[in-house]
Each structure stands twice: as structure tokens, then as C-alpha cells.
Image (cartoon, rainbow over the protein chains, first blue to last red):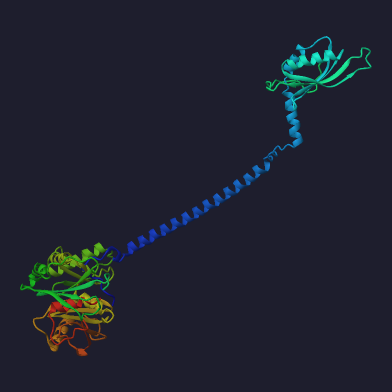
Length: 196
Length: 285
């Protein structure tokens, strides 16, 4: 014979025997909860698959973008000769041609023929070739030239008598030093321009 | 002593009084201590109310409980004379506890001629077979709850003696026969047939019955219950309880008989008061 569950003390809720209806209800709720958990797990896996797929697509797109993007230009590295040439060109461009020409114009005389001028920015001098009737006129010219701006002095580097010319002029090469204060940079023409 | 192993208090209640025992946490009843007892002088009809009034004087005021002190549980065993036990046959198609409760209340009213409102019902609720229902006075139930609350004891169980004996011997109860429970001067007779309860009676005996008187009582009860076929076929008797007059013979009234004394260790020369017998019956799990 089975035990009698007769007791005048109300047992705690967790010790109450569940009736058939309550048991069925609990079983139904448990089944529903189980189904809900299954649906959630399935949905979670679907989401994970979608996330993985999107990540793969992003990776492919990134590779495609990288493939289509041109490579960056290599860094500009100049050789020493290129740097010197560039600096030389810049110095030539920065030659103060108006001031130089003004200086030569101021000391110009009919007795002196200025055949060529060539600035040397590295040495800050202007080389020139001229012809004079005699030594005295040459020296006077160079003295006058060295006294006007932008020059700080002028000296003969070479002289000779042009025997081929019937007038036998004195051809001389000179260097006129530029004054120390740097002149304002002005756009000028290319080096080697000739002035008559 | 582990704080998680509760101390036990056993309360036995009869129409003549109550006894409160303290048991150590170990199993068994050897180290029991009698904490208090009350004795009432009241007519049988008013014994439950008088007992409810006397219960507050059963135990002294509780001392403040020390931190970490073990919990105390209280098991109460009611004499079958204080309880109205009966059998309810549920109507065909009955289902639901509310319907079964209504059936039990109606059966109570039919048997005892009064409303069950003042009684607390507990039963082995079954919708497809006759079941045992027990009712105890609400006033007595309230008094026991107040006693436990005042002493800060956990009311673990509150059962009639018949139910305690049934649960202790459930494996030995004959499927066709009788379970006879005796405590003090009270004899409860429960008839089983085909594994179901078929009859239930509580008798208050004026004096300790002899074996011939018990046989006459048994014959009278068997006559009250219609028996199919041979009335003595395959029936047996199981006597249980702590009363000294329970028969230890192997045959009673021509039926095979067996006696189980409860509690098993309480075989003493001097018979204990019925309330103490009942209290000790509560020590059984």
C-alpha cells in the first residue's frame, strides 16, 4: 500500500504534488520554452552566417579596391648632381637682372664696348667681356663699374689686343663682384643672355 | 552538532491531555526528554476545545535563540479520537481538488450532522478510488500553530495516529484485511479490500480489552462491512500501536494476525500514557 499524503500542515509550494493538469501545463510551457530556445539558436546561427558572409564580401571588396588603386608614386629622391643643378638653376633665375643692367647702363660710355656679361651666382660675381681703345679707358670703366650698385668692385682677369681689328682695340675680361646684401629675388631671363 | 540538523520536538495530543518531548538529533527515541505535559478534565465532546485552551501552558516561554543554534522542528501526532476520519467515495467523473474537497465536506456533514467549516480537512485526494479523509478542529490546529510560532519551532507535520502508523507500515499493510491501530484506549480499525480502503472506524474503549473482547469487536466490525465470497479468504490482521492490550497471538478470530509495536524500541513494562505514546509515534519518519 502506498503512503498517505495526509498532513494538516500545508507543505511548501515546492513540495506540493503537481496535479495532472498542472503537470500538463508545465510540460506545455517547457515545450514552448524549448521551441523558443531552438528558434533563438537557429536565428542566432543564421545571423552569424550572415555576418560571416558580409565580412567575406567586405574583404573581397577591400582586395578589389586595393587592386584597382594605382600604386603610390615613389618618393622623390634627387642625386647630388641634380640638387646642384636645381640650385644652380634657381640661382640663375634669382639673378637681379634689372639692377645689373641698371648698373652697366650708368657707366656706359662710347669708348667702351661691352660685348658679353655672364653672372656667376655661386661666386656672386658677374663676368664680362669688353673692348676699349686703351688701357686708361679700361681702368676708368672698371673703376666706375665697381663703384655703382649693385657692384662692390671690378677687376680685370684677362686682356689682349685684337690684332685682327684694324683699330687694334684692347679686349678684356673682367669680373664684377656683387654687393653683399642679397638683392630681392626678381624673375629674370635665362643665364647666359648676352647684352650689347 | 551541526546547525543544519534540526532538533526535534514531539507533541502527542489526546482528549485527556498532551505531552511534549524533546529528542536529540540522532535517530531513535532513547535520549528523549519530557519538556511538558498538560492534563485536562473535560467531556469528550469538548476535549478538543479544552486541549486548545491548555496548549499555551504546555511549554515555558522560549529563551532567546542563540546565533547559529540549530533549528527546531515540531511533529504533532493527534489521537484518532480527536480526529474524525472517514472514507470518501468520489462521484464518477469527478476531477479537480475543489470538487473532491466539496465531496469530502458533504460526506463529513452526512456522517457527523454538522458543517465542516469549523474543521480542517486533509485527505489522500483521489478521483478514481475511495480515499481516506481526516478532519481536525480548526481551533486546535490554530492553537498548535501558535504554540510552534511562540516557541519559534517549525511545524513539520501534524498527522493523526492512524496516518502515522499507516505510513510507517505501508509496505506491511495487507491488501485484503485489517489494520488495527491501538494507542491508549483508542482502537482504529481500517479495512482494506483489493488494495483499496473499504472501511474505517474509531472506537474508544472503556478499559483495556482482552483477546476475546477484541475478537468480538472484530467480528462486529466485519459484520458491518459487506464481504464478497468467503469472508475469511485471504484476509489477515495487522495490529500496530503502543497499547499494551494489542494481541501478540498469531491468530485472532480465525484470521492470521501480526503485531507491530510502535515505536519499536518502546517496549517497557510500565505502559506509557497515551499522549506520550502518540508523541513517540511522531518520531517515525
